[in-house]
Structures are given as C-alpha cells and as structure tokens.
Image 1: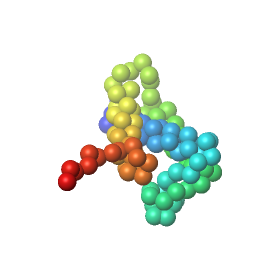
Image 2: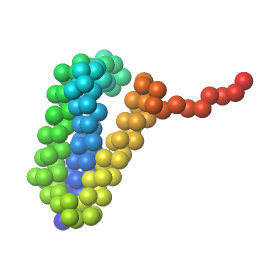
Image 3: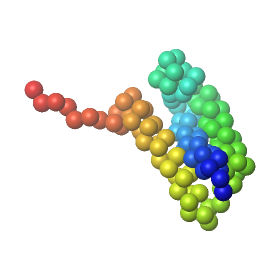
Image 4: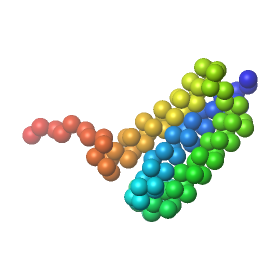
Length: 111
C-alpha cells in the first residue's frame, strides 16, 4: 500500500466522523453550525442543511475509505490511520463547538 492510500484513509476518517454531529443534529431537528452558515462555522444552519451536509460527508468518506484507501477492518494499520483522522476532527470539533454549547469550559480566574 502506498502513501496515497494512507492519506485517503486519514481524510476518510475525518469525513466519516464529521458526518456524525451534522446528521445527529439534523435528524433531531436542531440547528447546528455548518460551513454554510453566516459566519462560516459559527452561525447556525437549519436541520435540513445539516442532514444534507452530513450525507455529503458520508459519501466523501465512503469514496475515500472504500474506493481509494481500500479500507480493510482486518488490517490494523489502516484502521489506526482512519481512527487518527477521526480522532483529530473530533477533538477539533469538541474544542470549536464546545465554545458555543458549553462543552469546553475553561477554569475561571479567581479575583
């Protein structure tokens, strides 16, 4: 397997894990941040936009993981690379969206 396969697996993991919050929010009928909101990634998009964005992310993930990266869940190196991409985007999302939803609370300075 060459380096292009590992790159596809890494980014496929990112797209796969990025689909989760958008699909969950959309299916629950809740607005959520998306690249299409104003300002980008900060404003809220409708639940319909989030479902569409989530499905787009799933389609790209499938293309990268199954078609380009040839993901085989029996091969630990491929799963680790995909998981690393998923973990990276998940940590970014937790920090970024936590600012808006109270999930990334910083300790307050004492006066």
